[in-house]
Image (cartoon, rainbow, N blue to C red):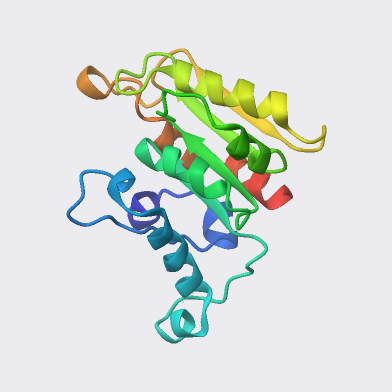
Length: 183
């Protein structure tokens, strides 16, 4: 949303996508928000009531998720519902191993993961593990699991947020939106 508001979003995004960005008011993180609330929000955006409130018509077969930081963990969880065509996951922070039920549900979902080795908030090993798991469990060679793993922060962030800017890097990339359109 900030790239759109500032006029610096890629043209392919502006021409081909509707961006809906829920905000978790009063919470430190989206991770504190019930998952069902996100799904209800998406359902509302796609409904007649959503359109009457000003939301554009949405092709419910072409809904994608873009999650950054805690939102990346949320995106992976929500992608297991089967309601989304694919997802972009940036600076994924889940330190555990995905349950087998989740990996089974993700085996047909195209996902592009972004992370930077120098991320001081979430270790790149989290995304490394996610990508390895997704690649091991994908249903066939047509399912895409892409990984953009950077050695250093692509946005030049330093200090307490060094390396934790891959959400910006991914959202500024026209190739991300071209890839989503190809799915």
